[in-house]
Image 1 (cartoon, rainbow, N blue to C red):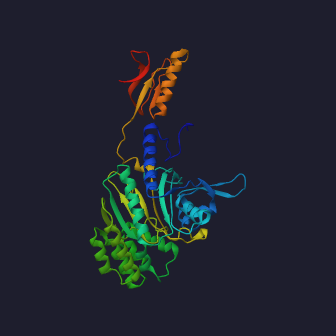
Image 2: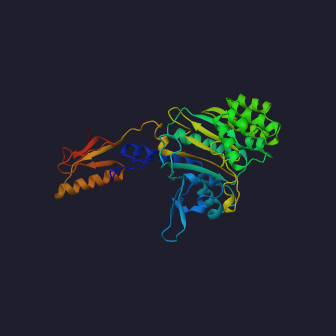
Image 3: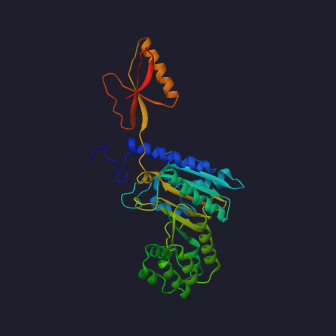
Length: 387
């Protein structure tokens, strides 16, 4: 095998894509800052027990593991940043009021989560801690939509669901964790036959309610239909009311519902959402409420947030124009060189990109549009002129 061949689903990012990714990253962080979110930078490497406790247990198979040569303890390379940010909120910041945090950094997966996906996503996310009301759910959803709009992605479709509906249907049924996971998988796949086999010994309201969930997807009429066919439960009624209120506040996106969508169910405790756009193979953004995420760190604070992969986002975001640049000659001696250096320094301090043509070489620049050059004018001064 050639020494320069990379592992499967790992790739170098070349200049054009790297430029686009960096521009998107800055726009996402600027949008979050506009909402008052503070930037944090958790480490890529942590003790394994810290990464894989609480809701992090669902990430066990996705986490690369190694041994610390200093302490001999097991370490993990993070597969998701949300548990780390929950640790920061609960254990390090320890604030009493609302805390808004955002982040953007690489995560590593032992295997791709879908065909052709990278195992090294660049994860951007935002988390809001300390407020249990619907206002926090709405703020996070609106921030997610504004982030995508800032990156010129669209049109957008928001799929809504609520983890409390399935929890209410299965309450008191005593399902073992392994069987519960199979029920969740059958719901997500809308496999009515498999679901019937898995739930045949459950109480009738639970069986019929779970089967009804498979058909409960579509426009806002789904909420009325769910209220009609699902068992009478205060938790289910509250979940449906919350979804109805949330979507009533959202504009600029198509709203749909899929009440059987349980991807990431180990995280979520309430309303959840996924945002799609044409050209993307899966949801660009997933988020929602996950109030138990900080419990293992000693503070079970209300929490709601979302995350996305900037590398995936770049595949559907509109192409960006090249940055305009100035081409300059190279002089290495004499008073002319000093004057040229002063002119180049002044232009760069003004925010201009100046590409110097090295002796004997034309500059091979693909990522800048050299539409001007630095040359002497009639009076002998260095001046910028168009090409």
